[in-house]
Amino acid sequence: MAMPGERLATEEEFVPGENTYVEEGMIFASAIGSVVMDGGKISVRQVGRHIKLIGRDMLVIGTVVESAKSVLFVRIDDINVEGKEYLALKDGKILAKPPRSGGPRFRGRRDSGREGAPEREEREDAPSKPCNLGDTILARVQFNDKDSYQLAMDRPETGVIATRCGVCGGEVECNEQKTALRCLECGHDERRKISSLYGRSEEIKRLFE
Ligand SMILES: [Zn+2]
Image (tube, rainbow, N blue to C red; front, side, top):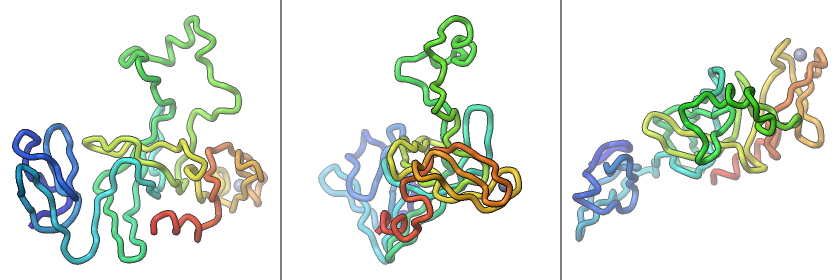
């Protein structure tokens, strides 16, 4: 019997089969079930309810619980739709400015941008943080890192799906272009990456069926 997240073998010993995933050369179970070793392949045969781990490229729903300088931390909800259950064993994070591939990794990007590369400056209409504390978001798992899921909001349906006013806590509505939220109580405006499914909970639910 294996539980989701349980270490089964190394990649040198076995080829990862069904209901497994690989992290740093180790093969882990992604579902509850019995471990099957067959012809050099290790897999998990599921039993009972369909419990799976959230993995790469899956859509997830979560709440932004902490906002640091360049990263947002997201508590990911377990998803349970139509008898299928997906477990989030780790929290998620969203980088405020995703590093371009090949870009400097250890140099302060912010500083080098100020020194003499005005082209690095962000476009006016691109918020540096796509969402904020307390937002409920729909995001895609971009990378399944060791300690967290790195989330992206790079598709039309990904983005903020519900929130309250950051100033007074009032109810907000989003504009038709889905670029900004306005508080119905105090009129405060906030820019976000807003999901094309903002406020359409039935359609959001259907994404997970
Ligand atoms: Zn308000």
